Structures are given as structure tokens and as C-alpha cells.
Image (cartoon, rainbow, N blue to C red; front, side):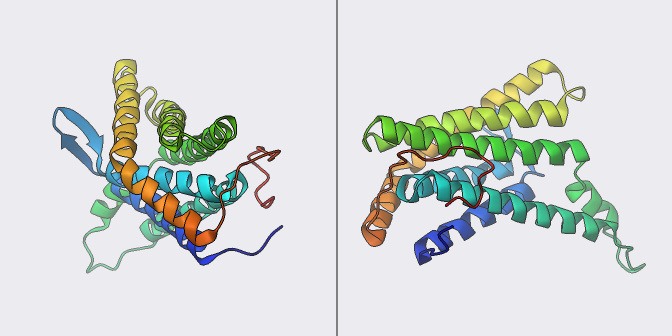
Length: 226
């Protein structure tokens, strides 16, 4: 295991985890975007995919896999302690317990769906990004950034919404939610692409590296093989 991590890599890893946790906090609010209904988390969650793209492009799949699992662990710690916070007995002078439970008291199936969808979606995103870079000889970054998001977000949504809402919402509504999430998050990636390209170029110049994953082990559970 290579334990040497550069400062830019550490910053990206921290930002990845922060935006992931922030997205989960913001998911509790439903917003209206024109004729579409979505969650407030939509405004920040795609940033974690963009950071994932940057890490794969500059540092390779293995380090992206490590960051994904660390993000998963930190998010789980956050959720566990948030539930502990809800369960702790309230002081009689504090009257907001019901509000906290309503906002942050996610059901087990929603938490399960969120955790599984995150791992699968993030890994699919990173693997598509990596394999396309190998196939294209490092060219066409914009195409692989968009396509990796399409595949990653599709996997995420196809797992999360059925687990979280099957039996609670009509099938047609779940299909609409899946399609809407994939479309909006991919559009987000496209709009942010000029910034992503600049960040990737800056990182490659500063780090002096541009990893192409030749003979990389794509097994998701090889966390520390970096």
C-alpha cells in the first residue's frame, strides 16, 4: 500500500466526503424546479461525481476506489451519530424533538437504499471513466465525464428509488423519479464541464501525473490496493 498522498489529493478526498454528507442533509427538502420536482440535495450531490471524475482522471481508479469507500465510511458514521442524537432524551425545555425526528429520522430502508446506491453508483462512475480513458488513449475527456455520470447516476437511481419507495409510491412515479434524477444530474455535469476540465488540467500540471489504468484491479473491495 502506497501511503504517500499529495495535498491536492487529500483536499479532493475531503471535499468528496463533505459534499456527500451535505447532500444527504439537503435531501430532506423537496424543491420545485420549473415543472420538475426534486430534492435540494440535487444541487450538491453531482459535485461528488465531478470530484470522482477528477480523481479517476488524474490519480487513477485505485485511489478513487479508496476515496469512495472512505466517503461511505464517514457518511455511515455521520448517519449513526445523527440517529444517536435523535434517540437521546430531550430536556423538557427543548420542544423541537418532533421536528428533528421528522426531518432527520430516515427509515431503515431509505438509509439502506442510500448506502447501496452510493457505493454502486460511485464505483460504476469511476470504472466507466477509467475504462473509457484506457480505450480512448486518454482522449475525449468530456465524453467520458458525461457518459460515466449517465451510467453512475442510472445505477444509483435504479437502486435507491425501488429500495426506498417500492410499495409506497406507484411504479410510474418511481420510474419518473429515476428518469428525472438521471437527466438533471447529467445536465449538471454538462453545465459544470468547463470548470471540471480546468480543474483536471490544473491538477495534472501541479501533480505532474496523468494516470491511465493499465492492468488495474477493478474489484470494488480491494480498498487498500492503491
